Amino acid sequence: EISKMAGDDSFKIIPRRGEYILFDKTEGSKINTVLFQTPTDKGKGILVTPTVDGNLMIGPDSTVASEKDDKCTNSENLDYVFQIASKSYTKLNLKKSITVFAGIRATPDTKDFIIEESPKCKNFINVAGIESPGLTASPAIAVYVENIVKSLMEMKEKGKDEYTMTVKHDKPFSEMTNEEKEKACSSDELCRKIICRCETVSEKEIVAAIYAPCGARTVDGVKKRTRAGMGRCQGGFCSPHVMRILSEHTGIPVNKIAKANADSCVLGRYSRD
Image (cartoon, rainbow, N blue to C red; front, side):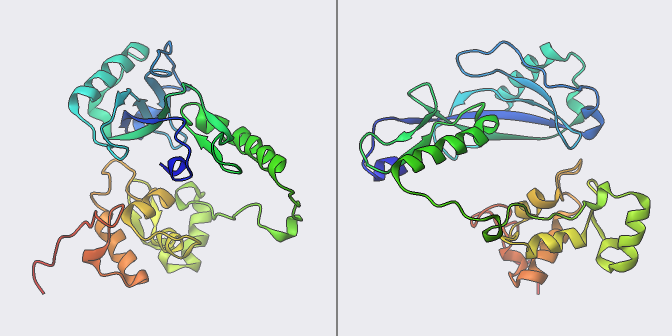
């Protein structure tokens, strides 16, 4: 759509949905590598993947979506994901699943990544249709695009003191040793308040996520920065507390706190004063 705004309609993007099933951390250690199947014309197939946080994940399938924001899931597709993934690992236990979700691939009609200066708009660079393995390729794509930009304009390299290379992150409370936890709790009262019991996320971490650069303003914003709500109960316990903390520190009324975007407020209205 952005390319078309610039006058380039040389390719078309087709939204393709992939659905996943996420399992509890009790299942993550049962697999120590990503299990691939033979790729098909739709992609690399349905995988069995141990996550860096200890969960187990299976998926995705591949179906054409009606809209680019169509991230719904359905039982038929999820049954198919489980059936195919079970061929790679026969001991999958569906009772251990904690959530399902879907994402959208930007599938180009060119059948390949589109990384080039637009043939129809000078100095406009398309980086589109980045399907799998787009995440793996992203560092190389950045260098490739940098070289395209260099060929189009003169660039001056900044000194390292002119920009920040890294952002410092405190060690998550859940990863601290007992000694580190004791020290943290003795120096900060908010460390002693565990908001998310499944993932052991303290109130201090949630407050830090709110006040960080580009800080969290939604329940999912806190979730993605701290893992509060990513555990076994999927926010059943901690979500109300996260909303309260967000409201206290941002001034947003609790009934206006959104889950993900402006149209996803968790509470519809107050039931009583």
